[in-house]
Length: 286
Image 1: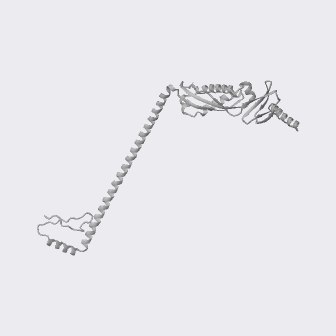
Image 2: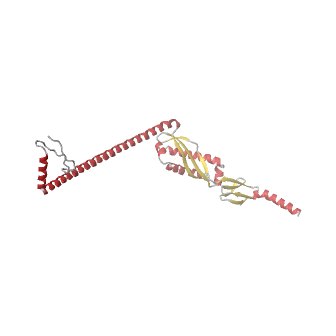
Image 3: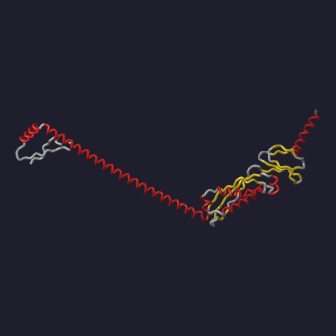
């Protein structure tokens, strides 16, 4: 029993020592190459457990995830001979570990080469565009052209370039203030113009409304006067018809009034508006 325990312990120790020399693990975030005396024996692109020759084979791991190639801001000259500060970055991944190891060897060296290539293509692209186009229009076509021109060059290092992005495109500090002042003045001019046009439209609308209101009031007064005149005419006609229907009574009433009024005096009846001859009131006597 004692010997079995000793053998078990020895076996575990041997497995612990020889295990990493016989097998290696590649996870989902890595790619790997197996080299023997400097020569590449195998490329591993899929995760899993793999065998190797102990004490002879060496395993080198590389990042499988996207790598960021961040170029420093650069002052570039545009087609119209104006300067812009361009800040760009790119993303790529290792797709050929063997070629990657043979050309750039390390990820830091790969990032340096990628930045050089992307910056060079950026300078060439910016030199063919005007400043206003870069600042005001969509940058997607510019980034796509840089991507397409840079991809074949990075493929020579076993790197697949996925995309290129412009983080910032700005004016140099020495001219930024004057440019922003001109932009602000231009926007202020447009705002003043729009406000003036709005005030003109407002005045036009108000004038039309006032004119329409005046016409409506005038028509209303005209119709009121017509209706008032028609009413008074009807009242007079009714009164005349009433007198004409009984002339004897009218003569009697007239004679009665004449007898009650002293001679040499005139009687002016006061007629209330809208009620002609309905209520006779004694007016001024002469």
